[in-house]
Length: 406
Image (cartoon, rainbow, N blue to C red; front, side, top):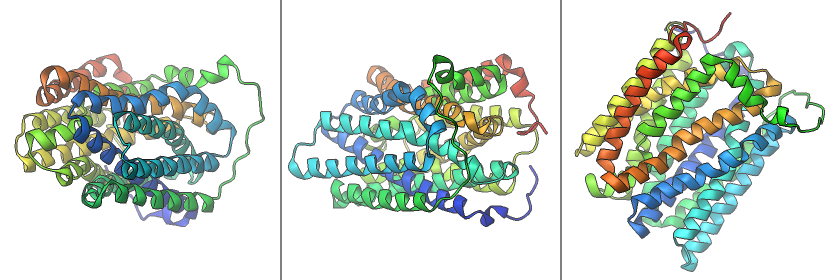
């Protein structure tokens, strides 16, 4: 990696508005997720129910994947994102009413999780498809890294703020989420970009599955996103953090907020570095090394009974994971034409969603069988094995030197 001169991203105001919108939207979502998970475990004391929360968020992404890609490629992406913000604000208001009305229960929390999953199903691929329209292609890797830094900062402050605000009650958290949703909507309204919308052609099976075919034909892109899918699917511990906070590390909601924020601290530091020092050589080997170390640090977290050691291990998981995120997103966006970005980003979001939400269900299920520490330990070991296998299955990705082919 070599140092990159200056920061020309400052001359693109629409990117700044997008950056602020993404931070606010991420903080909103993270705060809601941490409190929904805490309220679920506080009410049921069931790791299995925590897994169901993740599954409830993933199913809409899977069901809506092909539709979302078509919509993102055929309509104004800013308006789609505005609709996502409105939906999340409505969910937050309903949770406030349920909390005050005394009818908040397991079913309501699962339904809220489904609603959040619908919002994320549209939000994630649309955001990914919109960003390349706001900066020149030569600045895209740096824009992705800086955008990831802002997202990770929000991921740090969101859960931590949610945990501390929860002392004043869940309604205080959800009310703050409504305010952030309004701010994100205003920022979206300020974004300007030029894009000729495609002609309204008939939706066919070929157009619906075009994103899948595009990724399948580019083996390096397929290898990168599938590696992320399986590594985080088995190696993630996010869904079980309420269990670790309460039963292993013996802390409260404030400790859960810090644990949820810890991976984002490491990711933030790495993304800030990559925004100024783009990866310029040995891209493939660096990505595989980082994912392998993600698995190792996950195992350290599983074995720890010290709050400080657990925090440090989670910081490292976020740092190593961010390298993979920047490489994967850069490969996908740089090699995809704009007319296909919505559909390709929608397929990519399924991989990401599966690795997170479906991974949370897998973690909850295995934790119900063997306990949370053993479940996370096994997942970390599986991640290391997957890295070794993927290096053999995708040799071109292993030997990839640069993000761009130019």
